[in-house]
Image (tube, rainbow, N blue to C red; front, side):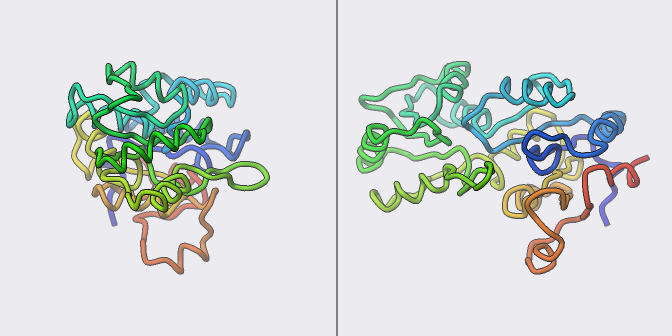
Length: 260
C-alpha cells in the first residue's frame, strides 16, 4: 500500500468530493486544514466553461477561502500545452467567454478566418455557426485539440451534454476525433502539474469520485489514486470495475484517519 505521508500535493476534484451541487460535504473544512499541514492542495476541474476565478468565488460562498493558484482547470492546462507545443499559432476556439479570456491571458491568438488549429472546449454558448466553422477547419486538416473528454456534466435534475457529446457530433460530421485531449484522465494535465510544482508522481495524490476521470487520471500519471464514495461512484460499481484505486474512502473526511 502506498504511503500517504510521502504526498506533497493533493489534487482534489470538487463536485462529489468537496461539495454536492451547492452543499459542502461534512468535515471538508477540517480535512482541508489538515491536508495543508502536510502538503499543498490543488482543486482540479475538467469544466473548461468556467474560469478559475469562478471556482474561487463558488468555494468562497461555501465557506472555503482559496487563492487562484489553488485552482487548475482543463482550460488552463490546454493553454499551457499550446503555449509550449504550438507557440504563436492561431486558434479557432469553440468555447465560452471565460475560456476565451484564459486564452487571451496566455497570449494565444484567436482567429476565425484561417486558424492554425482548432480547440474545442465545453461551450455552453454553442451555436450552429460555431459548429460550421469548426467542422470546416477540421475538414481542412487543421490540428484538433479538446480541453477534456466528459460526455455529460452534472446538473439538476438530470445530467446535461458536456464536451464529449459535442465531440461525438463533430466526429459524425467530419470523421475526426481530437488529436490531443488535455484534461483528466490524460497525461497532458498531469505533466503540467508535475512541472508547475516540481514534483515526482509518487509525491502527488488525486482525490475524486469518478473512476473514468479522477482515478484513471491518477493511474495514467503514476499518482496515488484515492476514490471517495460521496459522489458518482458507489461501492458496488467500484467492485465491478477493473480500474482500482489505492485507497477507497466513504468521503474525503476519512483521510484524517490516515494522515499524521
